[in-house]
Each structure stands twice: as C-alpha cells, then as structure tokens.
Image (cartoon, rainbow, N blue to C red; front, side, top):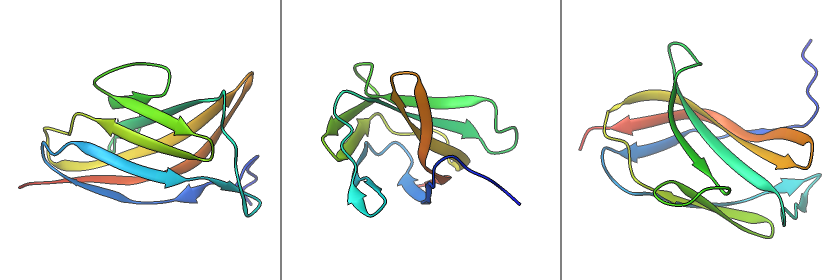
Length: 113
C-alpha cells in the first residue's frame, strides 16, 4: 500500500530534439483551480536509468534560459530544448513556504528530428 501526501497527475511529455520547450498547464486541487500565487515551481528532468542525475531544471525562481511563469492557477514552461534524444523522468514540485509537494510527474521523451 502506498500513501501519498498529495495526489499528483501522471503526464508523459514528448519533445523534438532542439525544439524550444513551451507548454502551459492548469493545476487543480480537489477539482478546484489551485492558486499558486507566491509559490515556487521547479521542474526537474532526470536520467531514466539512475533517477538521480539531473539533466535540466526549469524554475519559477530563476531566469533564462529555463523558466516557469506562474499565472494564478496555471504555469508556463518556456526554455531551451533538449539536445540529446532519449527517455527521461521528470517531476514538477510546488514550494509553499516550508511545504514541498509534487503535482505532476511522468516520462519525458526527446525524439530525433
């Protein structure tokens, strides 16, 4: 039996090698739009074989080239693309003060052109 603090969504993403990463998602909690104003979001992409080695990080707490912009209950990820085709793991975590919780996770696939 697994017990989680928060229910997260599993969403697999696909990108073409070297294409700009640009997508927007809305976030719901208990079927209501979740207001993330003042919170920090981090998207961490890891090597699928180790689940440890970090390949790329997108954050709302940093600038270019990897950036997340929060707009109340949605967020936009915009940044440089991936230069190596392959399979990776990713998750998006929200930091609200001292609380950190995962809202989305899944596989991230980078396809050859």
